[in-house]
Length: 292
Ligand SMILES: NC(=O)c1ccc[n+]([C@@H]2O[C@H](COP(=O)([O-])OP(=O)(O)OC[C@H]3O[C@@H](n4cnc5c(N)ncnc54)[C@H](OP(=O)(O)O)[C@@H]3O)[C@@H](O)[C@H]2O)c1
Figure 1 (cartoon, rainbow, N blue to C red):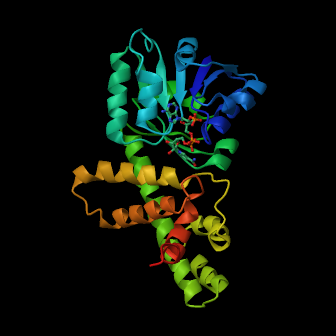
Figure 2 (figure 1 turned 30 degrees about the horizontal axis):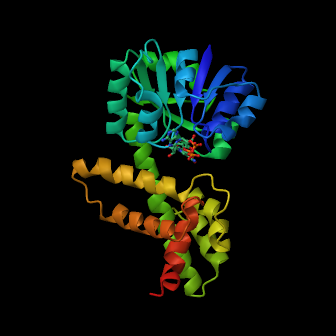
Figure 3 (figure 1 turned 90 degrees about the horizontal axis):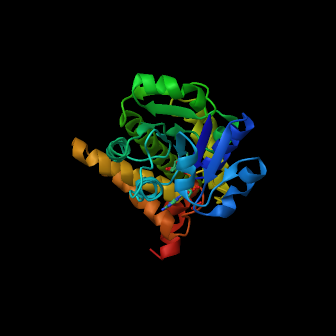
C-alpha cells in the first residue's frame, strides 16, 4: 500500500521516517520543500503540490499545524474529485468541532476521515512510542490499525470522530497547567533561597510529583529553551483550542485563561519557537524585563 504524508515538520518528519524504515511506499509533501530532503534521501517520492500526493495514494496522513492548514492543503481545491476513494488520517491537534467539520467536508468529497491525534513528542515519534488516540468507526479503526501501529504499539479507539480530539485537548490542558504550576513553585523556591535539590527530593517522593517536572527542570534552571520538541506557540495554540471548545460546556475557565496569559507573556519575550518550558522565564523574569 502506498501512503501519502502531508506535513513533515517537527513531528511529521520522524513519523514519515518510521514508515519508510518499515518499507512502506511513501509519497510526501511539505509547504517548505527543504524539510523533505531527509525523506527523499531515504527513498520517498517527493511532490510539490498536495494534490499530487493525494492522487498518488489511497491513504493520506496529515500532520499539520491546525485546521486552517488542513483546509489549505486538503480542501481548498474543489475543482476536481480529489478525495474520492481516499482515507484521510488526521493526526494533528485540532478541536472536536473542527475535526467533525473536516470529516463532513471529506465525506462530502467522497472520502473517508478518521482522527488520530498523538500524545508524546519527537523522541517518542522517532521510537514509535507515541500514544495514538483514534476517533473513528470500529471497522475503520481495525482497517488502519496496522498502519497506526508504526507510530505507537497500542493505538486506542476512543470513540467516533471528535472523541479523540477532545481527549487530546484535555491532556494538553494538563501540560499547560501542570508546567505553569511547577514553574511558579520552582521560581518561588529559588527566590526564597531554599535548596532546589531538597525541593525536588521531597516532591519526587510525594503524590504531587509528575515526571514532566524532571523533564523540564534542567531547561528551567538554565533558562535554555532551544531545540524544542514542542514550541511555546503550539502550546498557546492548543490552550486557545481548549478554551474555544470548553466555552460552550459551561465550565469555569479562569485557571486556564491565567495560564494562557503567561504563555502570551512568553511569546512577547520571543520564546514562540522555543520549548514551552519558557513558561518559567515568563513567570520569573517578566517583571524585570518589563520594568514592572
Ligand atoms: N511537537 C510536538 O511535540 C507535538 C506533539 C503532539 C502533537 N503535536 C501536534 O501535531 C501538529 C504538528 O506539530 P509539529 O510540532 O510537527 O509542528 P511544526 O513543526 O510546526 O509542523 C507543522 C507542519 O504544518 C505545515 N503547515 C502549517 N501551516 C500550513 C499551511 N497554511 N499550509 C501548508 N502547510 C502548513 C508546516 O509546513 P512548513 O514546514 O512549511 O512550515 C509543517 O509541515 C500540531 O497540531 C501539533 O500541535 C505536536
